[in-house]
Image 1 (cartoon, each protein chain N blue to C red):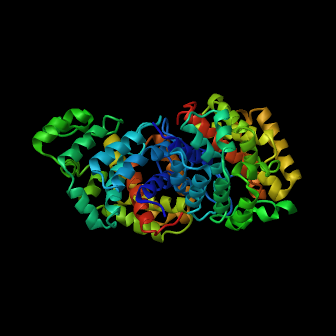
Image 2 (cartoon, rainbow over the protein chains, first blue to last red):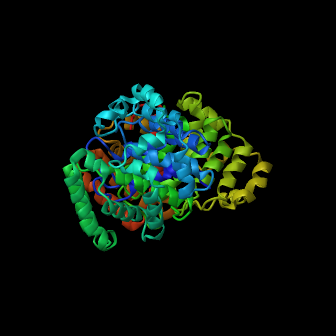
Length: 283
Length: 283
C-alpha cells in the first residue's frame, strides 16, 4: 500500500528510531547540535526528491532535490549518505528491486547526474576528506564550481563515486551492487523483537563487519578499528538480545567521545528500505 | 519550504516524539501493542489524504483517505483524532490559516463529507462510547452502514461532530473554532528548550486544562479528573522545566495503569501543525 517513495521516507524514520545505535542519534540519544527532531524534519523534507526518483527521474536530479529538502532543518546534514543509497534504490524499485537491476541503474548514470551530485553539496555541509592532488579540481566541497571540470573529463556519477572507493563505504555500495544493504535487509527480516531493536541488531552487525568510513575520515583508522572491534565483541554474542545494557553503555560512550559511525547508519537505512519494499518487515 | 501536507506529517512525527507525554506513546515509551514505529508508519501512510486536503479536496474524502493510509500498520488506530483536526486545518492553510477561516471550512462540510467520515470507521477500530438511543442508527461503529440514515436526516459532518459535544474534545475543536489548537500553537512558540520538551510542556498544559475525553470514555470521569488534577499540579510549577523527574514518574504511572489521554495528544498535534505553518517553530 505504501509507495516506494513512502517506504524510503519510512526507512529514514525507522533508522533514526532504532536504538541503541552506538554513536548515532537514536530514539534515546541526541548529539550536540544534531537532534532527533532534525532527522524527522529531514525525512519529511526529502519526500519530493524521493518521489522524483520513483517517477523515473534522473538519479542525480532526484538526489539533489532530496538533499535540498532534507537540509531544510536546523541540524544540517542529517541524511545525505542515506539518500545517496536510497535514491538509486527507489529509482530501481519501479522495475523490481534486485541487486543486478540496482547495479544497472547506477552504472547508467551520466555526467548530468554527476553535476547534480556536486550541486547537492551547495545545499549542505558534508564532512569529506581532502582529495588526492590530481583530483583537487573535483573536490566535492567546490560544489557546483567543479561542474566544468566534471564535464571536461566526462565523468558520470558512477565514475565519481568509484573514485571515492576505498575510503567511503556509501560509494562502495554503488560499485559493489549494494551488497551490504541487501544483506542488512535479509538480516532485518530474520532478526527478532520489535523493529526498533531489530534495527539496533543490524546496525551493530554492520559496525562489526567493517570500520565506519565516516569515523575513519574524522578521527582516523585507529578510532574506527577500535569501534569495530568492540562492536564485533558485542555482535558475536548477540548483545542486543542478551546483554542490552552493554550495548547501551557502548552507545553512551561513543556519544560522549563524539564518535559518530554515520556511514553504518546510512547502510542501515538502505537495508530498511529494501526490507520494506519486499514486505519482509511490517511496521 | 515544506508544504502544508508535509507540515501536517511532521506535526504527527513531532507529536509522538515529544516526551514525556504522560500515558501516551512518546520518544521513550511504548504502550502494549501500540509502539513508536506504528506512529511513524501511520504518519507516512496518512500522506496522500493530507495532500488531497491541501489540493482543496473535500474534508470528508481527504480524511477517509488519510485514515485508510494511516491504518496500514500493525498498531491499529494511531492518529484518527489527530487527522480529524489536521485535515480541515490543512484544507484551510491554502487560504491562510486563521481560526475564522477554519470555522468557515468546517461549517461548510456536507452530507457527503459525513458519509466519508462514517466510511473511515470501516478502516480502523476507534474507541467510542454508546450513543444515546435516538442516535443509535448513527452509531459511528456502524461505519458505512449508517450512511443511508445520514442522508435521510441530511446531516453534514459538522452536524455529526456537533452532536458529539460534550464528550469528545476533538469534536469540540470543530465547533469552537479550534481554540485549544491555536492556543497550543501560541504556547509552543513561546516555550523553551528543544522541541521534544516543548511538546511535553504544551501536552501537560492541555492535560491540566480539561479532562481528556478518551480517558473519560474508557475509564470514567473520576479517572480523567484525577489525571487532570495531577497534571495541573505539575503544569502550575512548570515541572517539565523544573522537575522533569516528577513528570517522568507521572508518565510511567499512567502507562502502567493503561490510562491513555489520546485526545490531548490529538490537540497537541494540531497545535504543532499551526505553529509549523506560521513558522513559529523551526525544527
